[in-house]
Image 1 (spheres, each protein chain N blue to C red):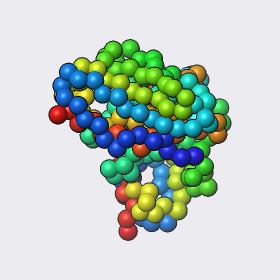
Image 2: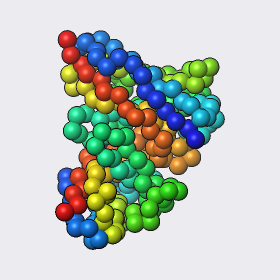
Image 3: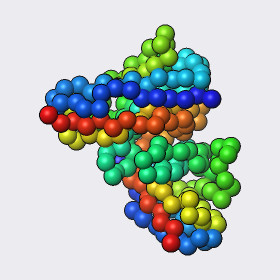
Image 4: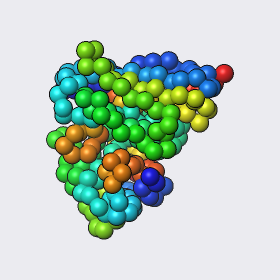
Length: 120
Length: 110
């Protein structure tokens, strides 16, 4: 079955760009079965949908983050990525990548999550 | 795009049933049969429990069930077990082509 794994720096300085990659295994990122998604969870808080991308490159973003977010997909490496610019301490969170079923909206599978701390 | 409203906490004793509500608007919960529920244990990634309001993925216990009335969806857990103690989140598709989550509910098994 499809499995996801996040990777990237665990510490980012304020005003810089947070960059994370999600590697898809057990299936092709181009299968069309999923919108490839990023979701974050602030410490001790709830889940926040960041956005998702289809293998074709079509993307949708949370309006509250849209001006700072870019999600991209690389079908040659079976990876998709998140870039969040101009970060502040408020962007400190666990970032999850997940597959959002392209036929019926639901998030499954999920990566294990990676904690990103924004601090100087 | 506002978060869906869930109670902060619920509790129940082993063997009992509990229900967690998830209230949205006609633009999300009430407008689509695309409500899903997730269980999250501490330090773990969320796990899909329910999708399309009331469908269960294979492998999820039939003690978990979902329903919807108007703008409010509900997750019911019957025959509470100690392992059910976790945080629960609802999610819905919305008219803005986005997905929105609830604030989460902490379930305590007494």
